[in-house]
Length: 180
Length: 390
Image (cartoon, rainbow over all chains, first blue to last red; front, side):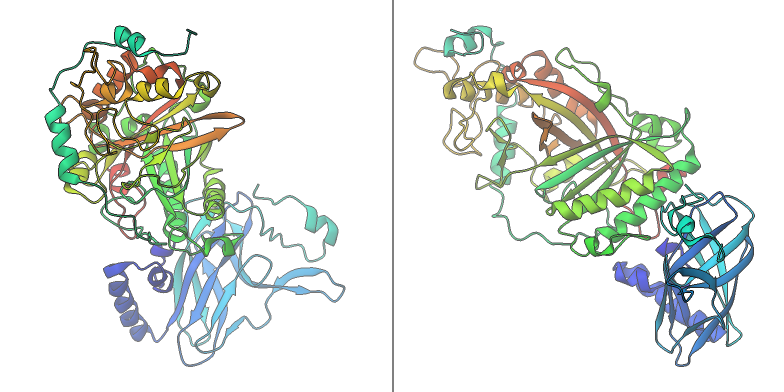
């Protein structure tokens, strides 16, 4: 949920949160100054599932004046977390794979994580993720800092991010989402 | 004379005794003090979501609405599931009403034109009774059974209400779709009741219902101190809350067709053309319930709707914001009222109408539900959070 994200301000301001917005924004600036990181995550959500893996989506804004790379991620609810991309495997089939070198975000730009494109993959989930819960995810950045954000768990029929790069493409495209 | 045609004398002889002038003074004072509503100006396309009151009640009624009745899963109210559902739906509403796509919105472009969208949340009796503190103290309970009722299970009380109102039916449909998806895993939608309004037809901004009547004349004026007193609660923990009555009232238009214009006007006690009372010339003229014609009969029949609906005590008032409905060939009215206290304000009037009201010949209540509408939502909170976590 946008107002539960710890480093947001973007969504909050969009929604004209009156006085609270200004306050949070100032606080975040202060925090950012101390940690040297002005990377913020907004609109974060994760697909509900009772299987072992799912995807995290949202916007990662690089508010610094230098390019940063999100090199690693972790979460308290997953044994393994990877940053994934979805690419053409050369035969016209879109496959999901770890993003080589991590997620690069130029200075001042925003990376969008969304179904069918770049996303954060939670694997080896330790508990079912129920709609309305929140999941904490930590990003490790190339400048050595970390950013933690809360993602809202939402039921979602798409984003069938099953990690089967070698599976038959047609089967993969048409299979039911494991979360449903 | 057919069964459904109405003559003046017939009405008089079947009507109850004139109710006297008990409330006439209060009614006059009320209407005169508020005067005609200002000419309607352009309504904002975006209503603030975080405010002292939930939007969608005092805000002007847009042309389209949909009322969604949701039941929680399970035999007992699972407070954690309730919290999670409200959290998701509140977040959706906070975004969509501001023209921002919901999280995981698969059609984000459809959120770009909020068109005055409001989303209002309510708790049914099963929820308020499962909670502690102020929500429970309200003592919310279903309306008593009335003889006129022909209630159908399909439209009965639910655990939660989500009321959406919007000028644009596309935006409304999208918002409904988003909220429906986020409800799916945590609740069951019992009913979805769409409604619509025609344009205002009087200077005061009143519209018509599907029986052709100017409907909604006597109403507290939005933004007035009177409105605040009638609608908003002031008790601890519920400041800015209200209660809502939603009744689905089927109109028997095939039978109404048989009633001539005079009979129709006598049924209500108002003229069809402009909504003016039969004893006055303007819509906002207060009906003179004492007036008699040359033969000594009441001009406004003893069982005319305006007489029976007339409040006897100042507290017997509520704010109506109904919508018309058309569903598989069935026409009717989604009667919607907001009042601080159902028992004290709404029930006395409803009891009178159920006992005797000309209109009952052509209208049949087929659905009924009541809700506590929690106070306005603070940024960072979900709807009714303080009540759920009390």
